[in-house]
Amino acid sequence: MITVNTTIKNKTTEEVWDYFTNPKHVMNWNYAGDDWHCPKAENDLEVGKSFTYTMAAKNGEMSFDFTGIYTEIEPLSKISYVLADDRKIHITFQETEEGIEIIEKFDPETENSEELQQTGWQMILNNFKKYIESN
Image (tube, rainbow, N blue to C red; front, top):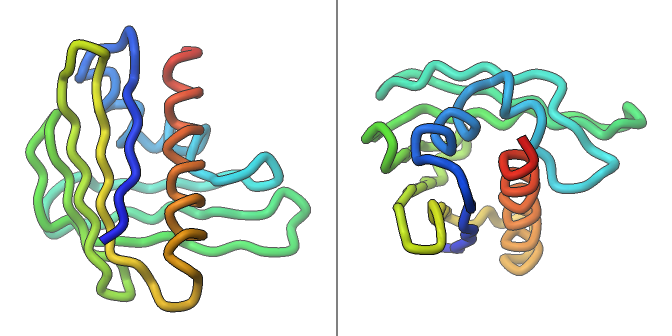
C-alpha cells in the first residue's frame, strides 16, 4: 500500500468532511497539477453507491473518469472504496493538536511507478489542503 497524508489547520472535522466529499468542492481541488482540472464530480456517499470524478487536461488533450464504489463509511472519520480496477483505498480523518489529519492508503496500480503514484496522490491532497484552508 502507498500512503499520503496532510493536516488541515483551523477547520472543523465537519468542514473537512464536507469539502472532501461534496462535489461542488471536489471540482475545485481534485487534480494533481495546474494544467489539469476536475470539470465534473458526482458523489453518492453511501455504502454500495459510487462516485465519479472527471479529471481532464485544461488543453483538452486528455481526460479520464476516476470511479469507485464505497465499501465503508464512518461519517467524519473513515471512507473506504474500491476502484473500477479493484484497487482498495482507505481514508481516515482524525482530530489532532495540529488540526484534522487526513491519511489515504491505497493499492498501487501497475502502469506507473509507486513513487510517481505517491507523488500524484500527494499533489491532489496538497491541492485539497490549499483549497480548504483558503476558503
